[in-house]
Length: 112
Image 1 (tube, rainbow, N blue to C red):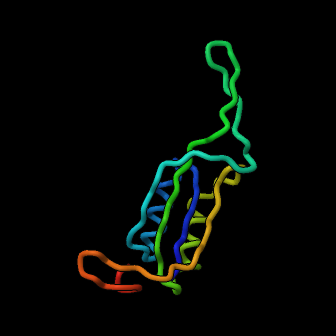
Image 2 (cartoon, rainbow, N blue to C red; image 1 turned 120 degrees about the vertical axis):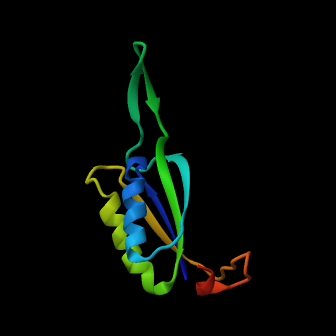
């Protein structure tokens, strides 16, 4: 099992959710986050004064998937989240040692 964490632009969230559903990812957790990478924020003008916005709004998606779905999920996220511009985001994949469904006590792949 793997935990896929994707940081994407917020307006691409619905597309990514739909793409993951199509490849068989049943559930996910979404968090509104702020951050920056190479984008380094941007400058805005407010009432005649310039100020720097260092942290940009992003959406963080976390999805636990079985090993056989990892590559399909990565491809789905990449295709749905890509705009071709700086700041499209990142995908991180980490090993997931154990999963337990609280309601039934099912474990590992059965809990997903």
